[in-house]
Image (cartoon, rainbow, N blue to C red; front, side, top):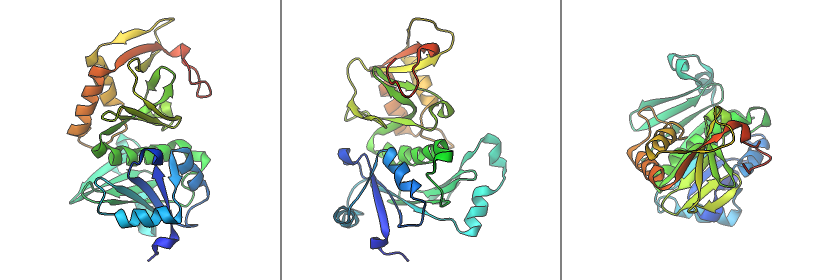
Length: 270
């Protein structure tokens, strides 16, 4: 069994003091993993910070640590297998007594329970590589969406823009997600953190619009956000997640925006 000194720890949105972490044994994965985590708002902890974290385990409410491990041959077969759940796509969740099992076919299996501080993701040593960046983002954002929900933070597939965020399907966002901390009035994205301002907009791209925006009703925005959240469960979003989405739909303006006017990732303005 590895000692604490053999693990590397990364904290999500460290500047916001969010108690969500990823850990793995040093040199067990490709160096791409550390690079990938850094690009996705994780900060590597030093020895002193790790020691402080370990002492706080069990004392900090809603702390989550994702322990990444290499799969055993049996688990590797489970990751690669074909099954009936493949009919619904690459991702699946299977409930078990006391925990749930999330699988992204051919890439990883995660075991998690909201009653436990530490969760486990079995993935191959090339996890985080650029060839499958979108898949790895989906997996890490599934973890974040589950881990952040008890903190009142809800994620949606999408990207930030100057006026707010553009919410879209998972494949269109290439696995990127934007997180709303509704109670602290924060927006967390790959481009940094910002406050939810009075003029903040949630935008939905529309291919039939030209040269103008159209306001969405609160009901339309609620339906749209509910179907584009990065929170994934076989029963749909949890009650607290639904409540936050409902509150968002009533307090933030939703707009239909011409798809033809949307700028690429290199230009975040509309």
